[in-house]
Length: 102
Image (cartoon, rainbow, N blue to C red; front, side):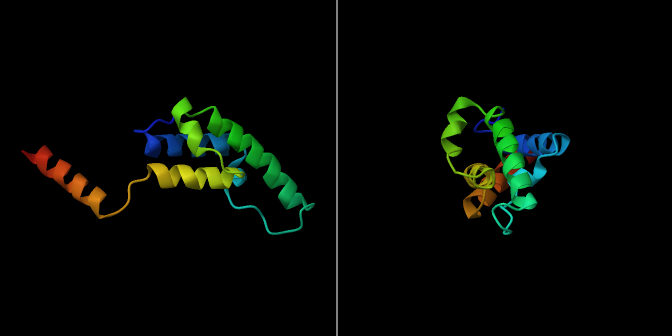
């Protein structure tokens, strides 16, 4: 289950679950075709199933990040919250690496 320390592993496992359950389309942006098209109906079904899988695969404290309307938006928000970016992250990783060598 996703917590504050295992996002990268959780993401890989969830992509495997989405593929196995044939709902990988559900974590992509909504198709731009008409609202009653087969593509949109398929996306809606897969998005709902993918969202359920995600909710069942996170710790309770992560549910606060899952309030977006679409599964795609939830997926993006979890990435934004948990993925490390920026100069400070690079410096922290460099420092950890240097300390490992000693």
